[in-house]
Every structure is written in structure tokens, then in C-alpha cells.
Amino acid sequence: MIIGSHVSFGKEGLLGSVKEALSYGANTFMFYTGAPQNTLRKPIDKTSTLEAQKLMEENNIDINTVICHAPYIVNLANNLDERKYDFSINFLLGEIKRCEEMGIKYIVLHPGSSVGIERSIALDNIVFALNQVLKEATSTMILLETMAGKGTEIGCNLDEIKYLIEHVERKEFIGVCIDTCHLNDAGYDMTKFNDFLNVFNEKIGLNYLKCVHVNDSKNPLGAHKDRHANIGYGTLGFDTLIKIINHESLKDIPKILETPYIGDIDEDTARIYPPYKFEIAMIKEGIFNPNMMNDIRAFYQEKDKVKGL
Image: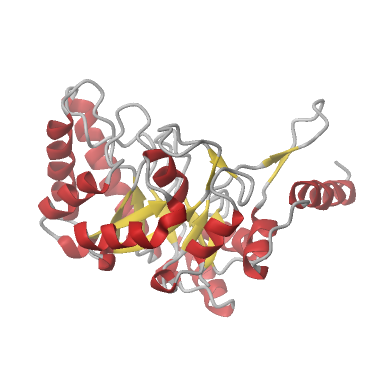
């Protein structure tokens, strides 16, 4: 099982990401190279990166399964403001170059939002932008993420993802990341995952499927809202998700958790705790833990006491 979660890049860069992933019992992870909401980026620290690569080798983390995520500010779908459109293209290219510096093979991308233009035009805008960016790619592959369909998001159905892939020139540098919460919210029934995979294979081809974001959903099927829930605590449920995680067709594909942090019961504190150590353990065991939320709080509160917080 290749499983991990979103982790921080932080002060130590890739090295900090590896350390955090190991603390969760993960054997892969996903990170942003800076804050996903802004353009602030530090140069890649070569020394830290080499240490990170060494630490991964020592702990059986295959760097070829590690995932980067492009920032949310990149929107390749809308070109009404040419300056912003060009910025998105150039910033995505910069993120790919940063991945290549670190030896990261995959970068996940939200295709974009049409925001006031026809979806057909938005799709062609994305195709143009991807072809511009991928002209300069040397090793990192863009993975188009399946979206929930919130607002004017592009990529909320397989036909749109198919269109994008069909029109990308360098197909060896394009793939797909499916998100279980997004698929549910877009109207794909995850309790019938075999049926979904068959449709995916017919329309796109399973060879393009390179990553799975494993998230429960707070929403009913087809809600188009994109609100993630912790594993087993949403409308998809533990049994549905564990079947997806353990599906034979996905055995060599990294699974990444993007589930919500857990808040303290005491409303007077603002502390929140990462669930990933406990969710990964629960997934590996294959048995739902109905007391997981309290276990997470107890674990991190004890750590806070030791630190004197």
C-alpha cells in the first residue's frame, strides 16, 4: 500500500516534508512548494533536498511516488485578463522547474474555472496553456485533478478531462489524479467504483491514472460543494473508501489523504491536530476506529503537555 498525506514544505523544504510524512507512518506524501494561496516562493535548498532524498531512501519512500500540488492561484481556464492568464502559465512552469530541481515526478493541477466564459472556450484555454508549459517539461508530469463542480470549475466530469488529454501534444507528460470526495460531489457513485473505473478506462485509459486523493465527503452524491471529511466520518464511509484504497487496479498508485485537521473540543483554544497518523494506521489495519477523533486529541494534547504548551 502506497499511502501518505498532505504535509508541510516549511522551513526545511523537502526535508521537513519527509520528516513529517515519516511521523505519520506514511511511505509517500504530497506538498506545495509554498503557500497554495500566494506567489511567495523561496529558492530550492539543494543541501536540504539531498538530505531529503537520502532520508527517503533510508525509509523506503520511493521519490517517484511523491506528489507536488500546484497552487490554487493558477487558473488556466480564463484568459479574459491576459496578464493574469500569462502569469498562471509562467507560474505553473516555475513550479514544474522547482519539482524537477527536487526530482519530483508528479504535480497535481486543478484545471481551472471558466468564470464568465463558455466552458468550451475555457477548455481550449487550458489546452493552450498546458501545451505552452509542457513544451519545456523534462521530467515532471502534470496530473489533472477531477473536480467537484463547485462554481465554474472545469474538470468535474470525465468528458472534460478526456478532452484536455486528447488535445495535449506531449501526452507522456499528462495524467490524472482522481479525488474520491470530488468524484462523489460531482455525481459519481463511489460505492460502484468498478463501474467508475470501467468508464474511466473507456473514456481516458487507466494508464493515465497516476494518483488518488482519498477523502471522505461531508456532502451527498452530486452536491457540487467540495467539503472533505475524515476517513469514515462522511457520506462515503470507511467501507467504501477502504475498498477503493485496496483495489487491485490501484495497488501501484500513491494514495494521498487531504482530510481536515481535528479541532479541540474546548472552544476556548484554537489548537487543531493533524489526523493523518491515525487515519493511516486505521487504513493499514482495515478496521474503522469510531473513537479516532478523541484518540487524536488525546495524543496531541499529551505531546503539548510535554512541550509545556
